[in-house]
Picture 1 (cartoon, rainbow, N blue to C red):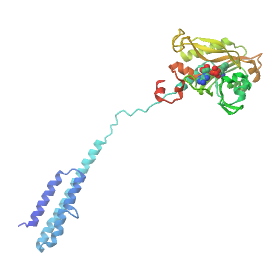
Picture 2 (picture 1 turned 180 degrees about the horizontal axis):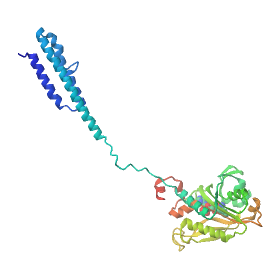
Picture 3 (picture 1 turned 120 degrees about the horizontal axis):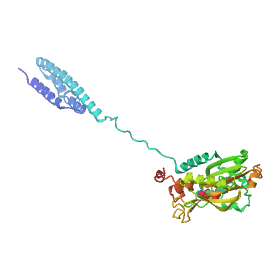
Length: 346
Ligand code: FA5
């Protein structure tokens, strides 16, 4: 005949079984364990603690029964825990699954700055015509930037180029690439076919077509026979490589202290083919740069005999070429670092 304690124990056992079956998270299992087996408030623990109050024989029977239930519930809990953990692990794996067949995120690829693109085209063009590339210093002496180019300290033509001085009257930021004419000639004997590209600096008011820092390319050819006709041929080929099509060159008389005769050169407008439009301000021509036959005094200065050797030089702004190529109306955009602008110019 079962006692009250045994019946209670059996009821608790059945209840614990029934509840455990429906639990499916680690937290719920832990809660269940605390309620039945917990050391402080567990129902079964309470039965075990209360054994002392029972009479001898009954204490033994209930004690054995309670211990058997405890062992059984612990085993059940462990089995359920393993099943729940396996379920949870499977759910995590499913949730965090990586589809390795999805396309990867594309890496953004930049492109060459428009001025660098133009400089690469210039290099290719000059090389194709047999000109060798040279480099010169951006921090220059008064001698190379001015005096060797026939511009003594009090020469009025110095006003054409407002200078950033480092040591006034002695060291400056080059205002043009022309000092390299002298540097190159000093370093070799004719024939010379050379060009230089790089930054130049002028302390002037900045506007849509004038920067204080900009780029020039300088060409120089020295031999015993060349003429302005050769200069024209080189400039025409240059213009065709830069702007395409059957570009024409025209000379306008000008003055540079280091060339004689001197000429500025224009290219026929590629937008309207010389008919006149907004780009060329309805003249049909676009100003490109300065040029001329190297002045005999400059030749003599580097130890070349002007009765034997002759040559031509030309110089032009690289931003100007890029502006025409991409129809850009403000020179300041090249150095503004505005990616929306730069991304358009590929
Ligand atoms: C010169 O600098 C001469 N050294 C060119 C030369 C070389 C003549 C060899 C004869 C023989 P000029 O100051 O005109 O010349 O400048 C040449 C070109 O540089 C101009 O046609 C223009 O395209 C560009 N340029 C001049 N000033 C600026 C400026 N502030 N911003 C942008 N481009 C400029």
